[in-house]
Length: 473
Image (cartoon, rainbow, N blue to C red; front, side, top):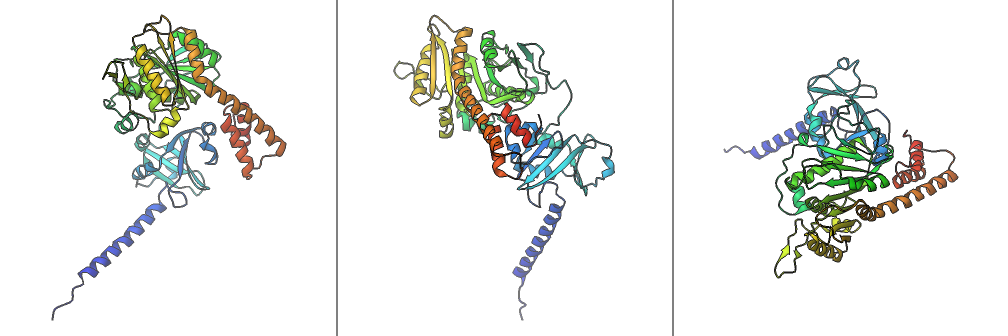
């Protein structure tokens, strides 16, 4: 008699057994996984230089984020990288006794939070230790933090520039420099530039970034930023800008060896990295970053303004301008080619909220092209003006001519700042009339204070609101 076959049944039972073992294994791992809050992945993670205590919703606000000492954020996809770096060898509390944390990691999920002190055990191993008792400790490969873009704060004066004691001053920033989150890799170039660019090849450690401070510079208040894109290897900020920079309170940034001879991808990437480096060392207004450049540098300023309108508030291209149009020369079948693709609708709409003030001269060989491109941009609803200076050739304008153009570009943001400050002061008065004491559990009070800070960060009303929320100056 033929025996019955149970092969399919045995396979199903084996699969079930494997699933059970997998579940048990995952449950065990979760219980010993520092990168979970209430057994689930964190919604956000922050690195701070000091311990502190704050709510996750408050530090979404840029001013409060800086006051909290946040220097790094963990993206959701990075938790799996961190988990793989956990050491399986046992680490004891005695091994970190007497050591001070080099920083803290705060993990949030909904209303729950876990804070770890981070200790350096040796050159290879870091230690995560819970702040609250009972103490839980994990070893982790120290190099993993560098792989997710986290650099520990340092008191080394060689890596952070002191603010000059006299102004105006032009400073060559010391290394190391900070890489921007905006990287012109193949994906970004395809999405934003939309034309073929060489592969990014610049080495950040080989670059030279410069910054010029305005007179009466106040390090406590965010300064606007003017980025100078030079056509030559000399990245020093031209003196004709000094009138505008000092009057309006702008810092200016330049990059050496970043002229027309440089590959376009590296040249533009240096702009992003220079801004990030200055922003990591000095307080800047990221809603007030403008571009200018001459000749090929002017063309670069147009490309960046069109491709990244969320990062740049406006531009003043000088004797050179590129757009996304094949601009007709006037001769049949001939045109000046587009060196950038047309922005997506989202970025085009934002570009229409910016201003471009281009400058050329009646004797500049680029004047005809710039005039055509101005008309094409205007037809697309972009606010642009073109100053054609009588008798000026392919040269820089005067200080007064540049200042006039730059003020026009910046007026939108300045008017917005004035109105926001006025509204913040009115809200402060309204709050004081309604409430005698701050109640941290009153959501209406918190919303009012947060709105004041968001309207006019770093101003007197914002400092007042921040202190009520527990952040000290």
